[in-house]
Amino acid sequence: MTFVNRLAGTMAGMLVFFASVTAWAAAGQPEPWQLGLQDAATPVAEFIAWLHNFLLVIITVITLFVLGLMLYIMLRFNAKANPVPSKNTHNTLLEVAWTVIPILILVAIAIPSLRLLYLQRDIPVADMTVKVIGNPSWNWTYEYPDLGLNDDGSAKVTFTSYLKPKADAERDNVPYLLATDVPVVVPVNKTVKLIVTSDPEGIIHAWTIPSFGMKIDAIPGRLNEDWFRATQEGVFYGQCSELCGKDHAFMPIEVHVVSDADFAAWSQKAQTASIEEARDFLVAMLKAKGQLAQN
Image 1 (spheres, rainbow, N blue to C red):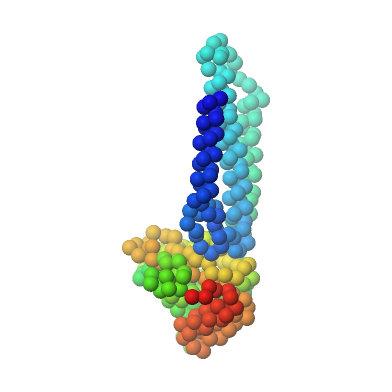
Image 2 (image 1 turned 30 degrees about the horizontal axis):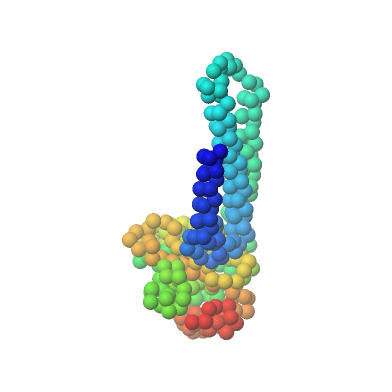
């Protein structure tokens, strides 16, 4: 009993310690000592979070069952407690059970896994399209073809997004290594189709937003497609998730999900002025509404 009490006390102490230093993840960005996935902001991310928790239950039950079985065997069938061992070699019911039960567990895992895969890869009819280009200089270029095309077929609204310098990030109270000088802007509750590629002379990158539950490779000379539909307004961060060279850690992604009216105002400004003016206009508008921190 003394050993059991000490073990219980140790485990309780560990729980208190981890509870004091961990934080549940929030939407949009990671938190220090984070526990769990970032809050889901799309249907795909919600499904991923559900499947993650479902698998965690299955794994926990299996682990506890195996641990209990091992403890029972060690206590019940050791040489001292069982000096005369059994000579049984077969148990038909047990052999059927340890074959059928794992199959049922795999089927229970496979069905939602395939549903999730179908949800991710079956791209619905898009409300808008954004082209994402990974550059060899470790930054991202974005094009909005729906906002108009030039005579040569290129998008009128296009910009390259760079890492926001540390001093500017601290001044604006935004996370360094995640914030960018010019963010991507999309409307809420709209299906956004992404066409993702990398500069033909460049290297492989990967465009990732954890709260959107998406990660898609940007491969030179190849077009990949993905999609998301953000169900809440806010600022969401990501990073390149492919080891792509010396500045891999300095290739952030920042997406602002705004209302239809705010997106229309931003897009109008982006078409008639510079992208920097459109960014400043949107930030000022969101601050006035109290949707961004006042700095």
